[in-house]
Image 1 (tube, rainbow, N blue to C red):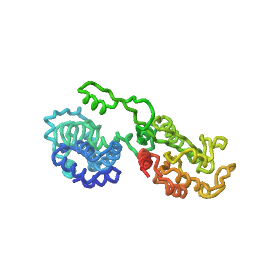
Image 2 (image 1 turned 90 degrees about the vertical axis):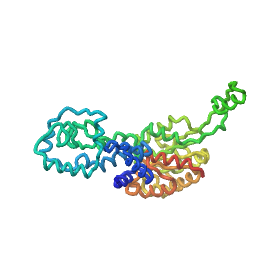
Image 3 (image 1 turned 120 degrees about the horizontal axis):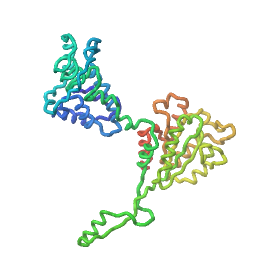
Image 4 (image 1 turned 180 degrees about the vertical axis):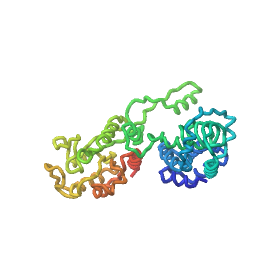
Length: 398
């Protein structure tokens, strides 16, 4: 039943399993959808969608699959004229709803075709002909939970219409992210530990209960040190040139990182196109405000988790040749790829965030250099999903 809907959900990226699908079939068999499309929409979403981040994909798949129910066949001008004069919306009691429990797509199409052949004029009210008001399955401004709206405005919000509105677009995780979403994702980059100095200022509930019980009910407050995030992070950002179209997104990440007060240490560094023998301390990328990359590797130990942010797109010579830097005044004694290899070898936990959508990595300018840098650093798209994947990679113990 609806097996093509299962495959459509999978095609839209909703991770539906066979077990969940069989649970949905059981729910439908027990009448939990009340034989209405709206009921099916909510029951299927509750059973099949595990995260609100997939709600929008579910809505798109639902609207695509069931769109024919809103308009099973092309309406004629005559039918639309019949429906121009609308009766006031019909209000129906819960008791009366019980009579509208049978919903079947093929049967709906058959009945509509039959009425189009037999109906001779407009109709308002009643429960059979195409019209307005009443309880007919076809028309608008009436009520039938197993019906199809033709023309007019929705009164009771059909399931397809609700899905088409895509009210959960903001929950998506494959869209480019903003400051707030950056902050939420970055909180997952935690390695909590109580092995820190400082006063014992957090109430230990479990120990308090234990000590109080051992003292015969006399309250014994037990205090402990709070757990602190021990993670050290270095964000290394590409600045200028081909990164200009992504300036706003980079600024949002920079802002979110700056707001993050839960890291033990947080450092920012910059480069232009590729890292050479200098790495910069501000986005202007001038040597007067830079440190030698060799010193940078001595300054930051391998315990730092390194996040590169850049499009990884450049001329092959900028990555592979000595003196290949695009800045005419800058002479790089060693190829950029050599320095990137040193950084990747020094920091076992390092990733690369790319603002270019992943589907274009092999077909855009710089695809050659993107592919080479991908071999050195796990590369992720700059979306919520991509950032979460990068954070999971950074947390893997090596």
